[in-house]
Image 1 (cartoon, protein in one colour):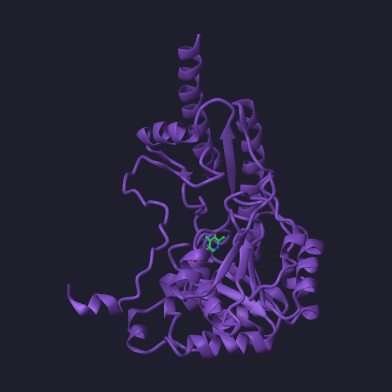
Image 2: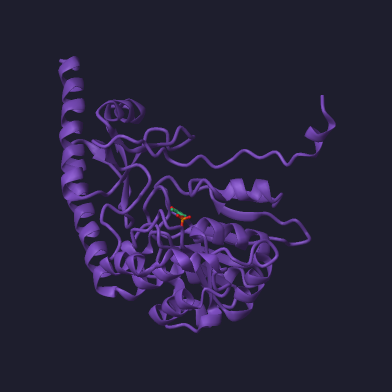
Length: 360
Ligand SMILES: *Cc1c(COP(=O)(O)O)cnc(C)c1O
């Protein structure tokens, strides 16, 4: 066997939801936004001349950073931007979860499945903290020695959110660790921990343009924290690649953040569709945690999730199924447009109806 293999960093990668190529599908499997980005983004794209690509982009991504700082009422040196929040969080793991005593980083057992992948890849010790039987995060479980904490709020894939008081409890119990709140879904009805930043220098809040701003394909994420945390992040980032944000991402991202009205309209539509979808799912015999995100994590009382997943797939309706302990009887269903959701419910009625028929 060739010796070089011994020198390879072997990792088990994150597996993203599939991106099928059909045109007639209903795609509810990767929590994308069913609405297009703001029309201002289209305008920014049309204003962009290919000739600017000759030059390196602004390494400070100033236009985008300024737009984010203005929107969230912080100063520019409190904002870090990256290639999706995946890039931001990866940089944060490298920067902040580096304690010499090798105490484990804590995150929930049922959570974003990229956290353990980064920890493994960067050789960061970690320990998963079980959610309770209702899939809730219990703050008292985060009072144990650790080398840092990360959790999504709302949590994925459960959709459950915790309040700012609970986040404060976790922060108060861990003044010597960086606590990262991954707010990928916060815009669908949860209070952001950004309001706590003045009182907690160890808090880093991460958000993304992929969900509430309909720009998953553009790859923009950001972190907001105190200036010292942000400058540490930049030092690590600049030790990899100073030009993570390309010219188009900077211009289009800034255009998206400035269009507050469109943002409110589309997130509100998704919230309304979600609440309607909950009622429809209940009527069909599903139960689910009370999601505050743009997806619902649902389990059927009599038909196995994997079976429903397969039958939906045959009909070109894609939802996400995780074959993992504790959650292997759940489907994570992204909230699409009302029309897409209606197609899902029509298909579910057929699928579940056939089961009722078989039993009689
Ligand atoms: C979608 C998601 C992200 C990452 O999204 P990007 O597209 O990389 O910005 C991060 N955390 C959670 C919990 C997510 O669901």
